[in-house]
Image (cartoon, rainbow over all chains, first blue to last red; front, side, top):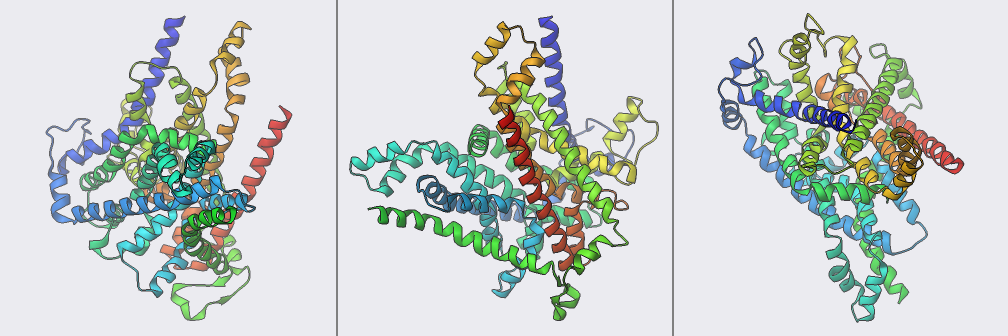
Amino acid sequence: MKIIGKFLKFIALMMFLILALVPLYWVIITSLKNSKEIYTFPIKYLPELISFESYRKLFAFTNFAIYFKNSLTVALIASFGALLISMFSGYAISRYSFKFKKYILLSLFFTQMIPIFMVMVPLYEMFSKVRMLDKLITLIILYTNMMIPFSTIMAKAFFDRIPVSLEEAAEIDGCSKQQALFKIVLPLTLPGLAAIFSFSFINTWNELFLAVMFINSDAKMTIPVALNSFVSKMGVGWELMSAGIVIALLPTIIVFAFAQRYIVSGLTEGVIKG
Amino acid sequence: MRNKNSKFFLIMLIPTFISVILLTYIPISKGLIMAFQNYNLYDLSNIHFIGFKNFQEVFSDTSFNFLQILLNTFLWVIGSLFFQFVLGFVLALLMTKPFKGRGLYSGLVFYPWALSAFAIGLIWAWMFNGQFGIINDILKKIGLIHQNIGFLSDPKYALLSVIIANIWCGIPFFAIMLLAALQSVPSEIYEAAEIDGAGYFKRLFHITIPYIKPTIINTTLLRTIWIMNSPEIIYAMTSGGPANSTNILATQMISKIYNFYDYGQSSAIGVMIMGILIVYTIIYLKITSLKEFSL
């Protein structure tokens, strides 16, 4: 009985694994085929010879290296900005008891319910008045703001789990409040901060609609905007599209691989118990 | 002393306040106002209040059957949520007890969580392709179908196809969350139940699920909000077509902006989405916490 149970469990685990990997496998395989091989029958599940033609074309005929750089710049700066700001607000909400605390948390949670297209046009008008359209700094500002509410909620939950007595002890020993925060509390929340940063990086790297709205010129495009433009562009076949998608996916997969432990504990402990 | 402290804390909150008020709450107020205005890019010199006319026009739109959009939205949210949750839960249960290579395994099954929904939509569009898609090819090879199906071009299959892509996208979120919750269940409870002779499913429904109920409630609520507000997959795969068959409220908002430049009507749909989500959240939290009291 026990052996049969174990076997069934193994089969089930394998099925989940295959289900998870097939789409990634298929997009990678497509990107490594040459353009003729993609549109011929029978469909080949292994490419006859691996060709990096699509990647060469992608970087030769489009500014994909620039899009990559833009995406990376925007995602890194915005995630760092959101982390810095939400670290302080999360700490303040966690440690300081004031009357409207519940309402502040609620107003932060409420931002999650707002459809992005509802604020898009007012934001567009706002930024157009100060002549900040089609600029990467605008995307950085918008993305930082986009990540602040959820990051604050996560940060608050992390700080909640660090006993106040630690800071009080430090203060008795002659530390100021600021010193207690920077020397005692922050080092302890480092895994949590890593989780918040990775979470923001993944979300900002993947953001599509704000970028499509605010970026027009080719030199300012981020990767999602470029992929979106490929959809409607004539002559962009699935081999080129797949190469673009693979490059779009790589950074978040890498971040996830390295930060998985932090992200998992960050999401679960930070949000669910928070 | 206390005064000095409160100043310290207030200063820490200022950047968040400024950012969220200036870039979220002021724009959303404007968006709410726009829902009651004639606000069209082609008619910008003529912005004025028109009461509920935007809502009426969305309801009675002849080219987009609004009842169908509502039904699609419902199926999209419920269908995606249900299977994401069930499959995520099963995966989490399978992974609760340690096995060799669990760390690597979790990386390989959880990674879709980090991917862009838009890119996932594009990949699934390619897999569902009516001519060269592997899903058609595989279904033919195992003899389930004999002729290619136009999954994304046939209104009969399009909604099902986008929901399948969305389910794939959301399994890891639930698996991650529920796995962590399952691992926090103290093993003594199980031991006691095992001594009492409770079988696997009895233990699952009478011990495990009640114990991790707060996680279940929080994750399903959060996920519902996200699914309702994430049109990326549909946008990438079908843009709401063919013949309105995959159009949900969130994609209809996009279409009103991208194709008709009608910001007023788009905002009116946004108001409906927010209204539905607020009512849903209140009812959901009421029902779930009431049950908890009765347990």
